[in-house]
Image (cartoon, rainbow over all chains, first blue to last red; front, top):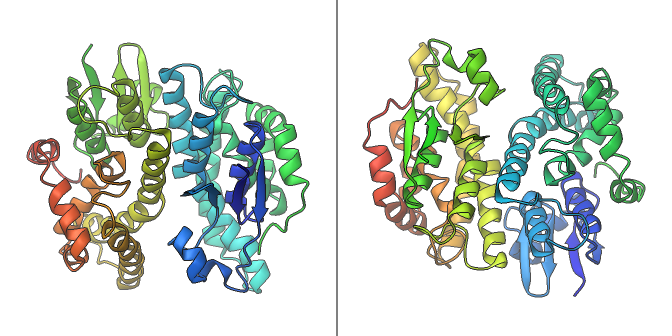
Amino acid sequence: MVVKVYGPDFASAKRVLVCLIEKEVEFETLPIDIIKGQNKDPEFLKLQPFGVVPVIQDGDYTLFESRAIMRYYAEKYKSQGTDLLGKTIEERGVVEQWLEVEAQSYHPAIDNLVIEILFGRKRGIPPDAKVIEESEKKLAKVLDIYEERLSKSKYLAGDFFSLADLSHLPFTKYLADMGKMYLIEERKHVKAWWDDISNRPSWKKVFSSRWPLLE
Amino acid sequence: MVVKVYGPDFASAKRVLVCLIEKEVEFETLPIDIIKGQNKDPEFLKLQPFGVVPVIQDGDYTLFESRAIMRYYAEKYKSQGTDLLGKTIEERGVVEQWLEVEAQSYHPAIDNLVIEILFGRKRGIPPDAKVIEESEKKLAKVLDIYEERLSKSKYLAGDFFSLADLSHLPFTKYLADMGKMYLIEERKHVKAWWDDISNRPSWKKVFSSRWPLLE
């Protein structure tokens, strides 16, 4: 059964694509054109009532929320492809901890920058310097903690690549598009971590597909 | 081994307490006085580098982020107490989906209201009517989707109480403190769901402990 992934052009969906590649799960992508309002089509809302992407269909099983989808495939194919959850319940606990940090602290700070700078640029709205400054400060604080953490272990959850690292890929890429990669590069261990995870074939494949970054 | 839970006075920590009671895991609570800055003590920062609660210690295992801690205990004691993850990998997927909706959509909307109304009241800062209106609108939109979902299944992830429902308890309680319980009560299925989950002995015990709601 080939997994259908709706909305491959969007950053959150790329988390799912990288995860499926790491787990060696076959998939096909179905673009969702938000400009045309396809995300508000009654048929799409039956799959995803919030009208956002990604959502997957796997036979008659439907699931949305990128991090939930990743957890599902990482668990379903535990022993196939890259193990992304750790070997023990304790290791999985630490994976979940850093995955929550990504979702609750790292992602919101970058997302605010993306909305202000990239969305603003697309719509011709000048960015709000105060929002940018505050978001960058929040992100820097999170990255300081990552720097300390990554000085002790190669990846966030330990010495193994996991969902916690993977989940950072698509939105960190936006830092380059916003000229803010120095936030990563000026931190030695964060830089080494980013160089490592962003060079994984799974991410290179998803990234080099050249789907438009913002629709 | 008794689990140590730091910061029981805070809403996020209450998620963990309810989970431990449901899983019949013994715990002790260690208050963290944020007014006195105990959350920034070097010793505390060794446990939780972001300086927030909750954090748990279980022997020499330390974990932070309330939803990660809940997942850990729900999995570690899968067959003890209430099963909070579903019976199959597919059911767990749906639990994770709604747990992500809580974390990404429901929680941020209520949290904005709490900061604006309750924190503002404590600090003598008048609330920003626009922020309140926008947050309430966002929350109402999420609750409309819950209403539809809960017309089809008793709980968010299906016909079983799970981490997805549990995670809503502490912050939904704030709606009462803010005079906004009508958002729940004007939706028939959401109201029935809230009446059900808020009457669980685990929540009543955590709630009736009368820890201060905001420090």
